[in-house]
Amino acid sequence: MKLGQLSIHDFVNELSSANAAPGGGSAAALCGALGAALSAMVSRLTKGREKFKDMWETMEEVQQKADDLAGLFLNLVQKDTDAYQQVMAAIKLPKETDEEKASRQAAIEESMKKATAIPLETLRASEKLIQIAEKAIECGNPVALSDAGGALQLARASGAIAAYNVRINLARITDKKFVAEHRREVGETLERMETLFSKVDGYVNSHLI
Image (cartoon, rainbow, N blue to C red):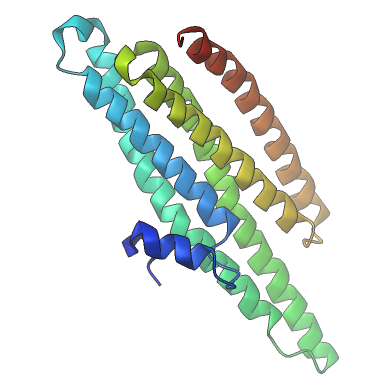
């Protein structure tokens, strides 16, 4: 199933079904795509308006980066579902003999590592999106401040959900070095994101009635 080709209605129905995928990881990436799209929109609402001419160059950079991120996030919507389906396929492998059990466990470990890489990529992209949203908020057309603020909130949600998915996957991985490295990156990334989010969210609220 090509999730990116579904209507919004069909995607929501698929997400709400009893199928394990798409799930939270794909939803996280979709949040990111929406946030990136809002950032790009704010840029386009700013460029070309003479009163914001000093911001055109910044907004051009925001637009290009946001458009690129939107494409990346949409790709991650599909990749997250595909990765989890590989995990499910590994879990269903035969486990009657000791050899089958060992082979199955190795397949699960490998598929879990691959499945962990996708939400981690979403988390990294979400941090970039918060930085882009900051510029859209501070340099964009003030009329679109709520839209730029929406991009900020969606970036934060995307990162938080993606981090949940990384962490739940790590619980099933036995490679201690892999787990420690990924857990540390998640924690450090979330800390940076939260610090920037708090600052920029404060700016948004101070400029709204």
